[in-house]
Length: 223
Picture 1 (cartoon, rainbow, N blue to C red):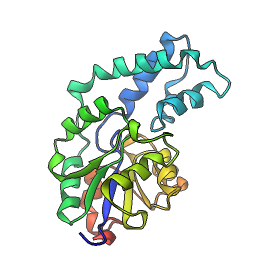
Picture 2 (picture 1 turned 180 degrees about the horizontal axis):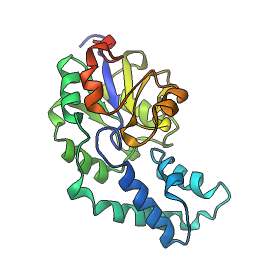
Picture 3 (picture 1 turned 90 degrees about the vertical axis):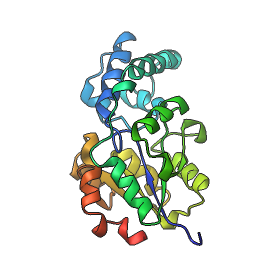
Picture 4 (picture 1 turned 30 degrees about the vertical axis):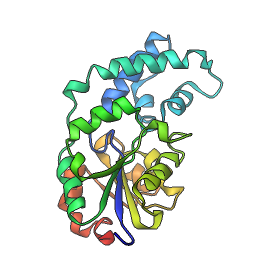
């Protein structure tokens, strides 16, 4: 396709209902390491890469020797939820609708490969997905733009011909560094005001809300 256009999607909290599960799992993993961090602080950090999340909630001067153990505990706790994960309302229909408009659908995830595979299984939409990234594709995690740049490379898309859909201010920040407009969804627990204040070009409640307004959304301008 000449001059292809596409939509890049974050997965966690954007397409699959995982944000609060991550919050609880990080909270428990931190408690196991004797760090008592309020869940509200953790929730506001979800969407960053694990390394940056720990620095954000524990401070830049914290002892990093225990980071790997905390991350491992989070991963083990979170994996227990995999059989019960569910797509957010309208998520799969939105992916298929974008593909139906002739747009390349790309999952720009910074999850580890095994976790990304579990999320893809939940969505069950591989037939309309052009590319999927994982943490192995980025040197730096969000809010750095590396994973977004990797999504462009893998899908053969240019930054000027895509929009990004995410649920956190970290998604908005990552895409903004590449001058990619970001649509924010509040279903991950970040407010409309926060997403718009971070630079989101439009904000919707969840994938179903965006799907209902698709013909008037920034996505429609691509097709």
